[in-house]
Length: 332
Image 1 (cartoon, rainbow, N blue to C red):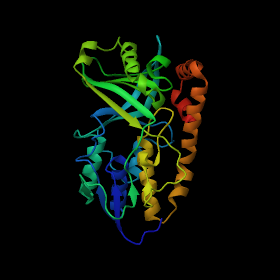
Image 2: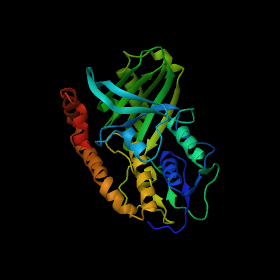
Image 3: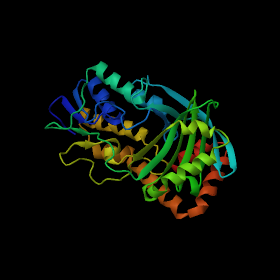
């Protein structure tokens, strides 16, 4: 993408927009970021989310650092987790299989840390601002959601531990999880938008699924939340004004399980690279991301086509493997 000017305007101060701004500013560009909300991370609830680390050979933190982005945000590696199907459970060895990062306005969150990095480099970030005449990068996030989440944030006396469960009654086609870290808990169900009317049912069944590990009284004082993500394989990777679409604005999401943060940062780098090196953004996406997106869609279609059989197949594939991350990498 050839640009004669060295001043770049980015719409959206999510992790993809800020990552792209950091990369470009570090490489000699003047970058302005315009965000319609009053702060970063306002879509989120200071909850912990997983940055997956199984889909590429390179560790995701090293990959982020290779782009020129510091990994100074708070993170916690997941080295093991309990995997459930009904009453069956297996402790999986998944050393550095993912990194928990905080999303929201809290100090040390991924969102606030990227904002701090961008500002320290000289990026100008304008909040409560919707549009300028010329936008080069569209990082405005999902306009709709076909992957939904419903959960509760709560304070707990339970010990640090991580749990994941699959099953038709708790999260049809997707999964539920319980994360407990340093007195803070997150319990949630992730499901497809076609089951949006079952969100309360899924959440209550998820609470029952994990009832051995939590005090339900603690949940009563917790904060309920919802979230959404959008997967879409777009034919056109530019918006109506010609700006490059990155992150979920471009539909870049994991349709199998909803782990989309790695895509957000990868596409921000590819967009920056297309500007810096005068390369085709479309060709860079085709070479680095497109096949994984197609695999993600394939996995979703296959999982749903198997119906109730999909759950035991997935459970035993991971539970009986000595290397469950290799199974996941093959899937992705």
